[in-house]
Length: 209
Ligand code: PRP
Image 1 (tube, rainbow, N blue to C red):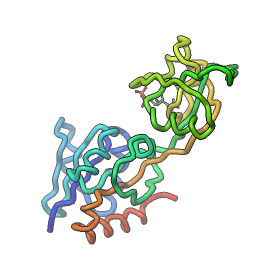
Image 2: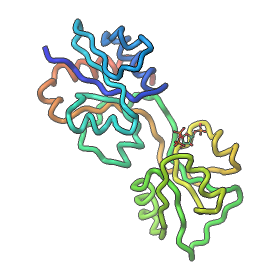
Image 3: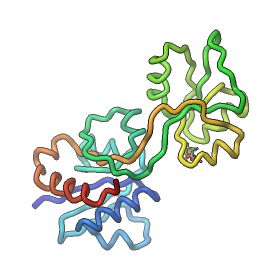
């Protein structure tokens, strides 16, 4: 039997996801050793895990380095990788929002300046409304942009809302709810069809509704 290669997002979400895989019989005890290794395998149940940067999981899966992976819906919407989405893990729940300084009023006669990491999501959101925008692509700490009047709004992920609150910003629109998704490489779903569908079935049983 071939190994099944699984790309997990490094961090708290990835650890929760690994626990679910362990629960359904895809454990890999070496992964619990706190070292800096990024690849772990268990010869017994033929499973190999990679810890990858969350935004890179879909790249490994799309290219077939990983057969399956777990990634936020935000990444799937932003990059539209050529993969299959197999299940909603019902984890890592948050929402993609537009936020601005408290009391911000949009002036429709002016181009709206938008700071974001999620350029495509922001573009399609405003294209749908026919609103002219100018994007300022940032890589993190997006909240700073409207505070310093560099942009009018941000398009970003809101989980607890604490970051916005502590920076005197507020949500002005929710674009879409986000959660972690199980994804698969397209060819792997053919060549490892039985392994992948079995894993998916077992996972469905432990996904909290
Ligand atoms: C994300 C997001 C917000 C924050 C929202 O940032 O960009 O800044 O989390 O969470 P909250 O609503 O619970 O406060 P992340 O920590 O991923 O870092 P980033 O600034 O590099 O995007």
